[in-house]
Length: 274
Image (cartoon, rainbow, N blue to C red; front, side):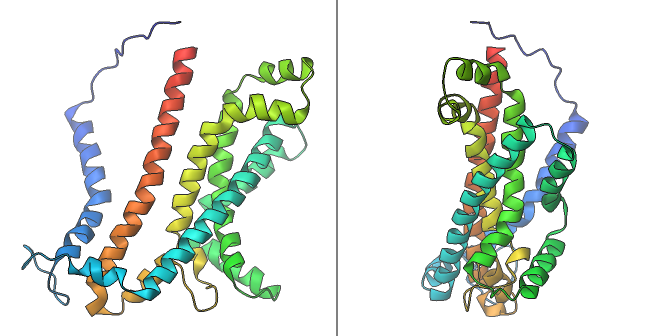
């Protein structure tokens, strides 16, 4: 086995370290403020330091039936949208990678476009299209909206993995008599498994906290981000809203953290085998 080479890269300068710390502080400080004020006993004013400490708002939040309905709907939508994204994103990546046809780059660009467009543009376009077709807004229209940008995440991950996969392995499998299904199951799937898992985790996190394209509701139910948005007009419910926002942050943090670890681990493994 090839030996690991020592890391001889120079350390980062203090200026670069300060810039990195400042960026992290800018991104994460508001989330810590939300977390801090989930423990305030005063439901109307926010002062620092806190006038006291309480965990009662967690109990109040967990007793809200409308919260549980929104949380359940968000989890269901994220799960179905992720499954759809895994299937469509994988097929699209395989088609773009393995086929050389006219307009391939244009199709690849169109697949990536939804993640680059502002969410409000995607939401308005979807709402107009679905309304113009006289399709009633429901659970499945929310799934369609979320799948439009979840597919991009899976497509990017799987296509990148296809490009790093040795094509001779697939050719050898076919030469040895394996059919297309056997080649996919025993050669292709093991090679793209970590990319699928990482893409699925990211897609789930994106779908769960997406607010723009879920402005159309499923009957009287709304997804969790829309529920949080509706609570902003109720100052006395703000501590409960902070609790729910903290739950959303934790639920979306875990899939992204796991996906990052999977991607980093697979990259290190590939580097060691070269």
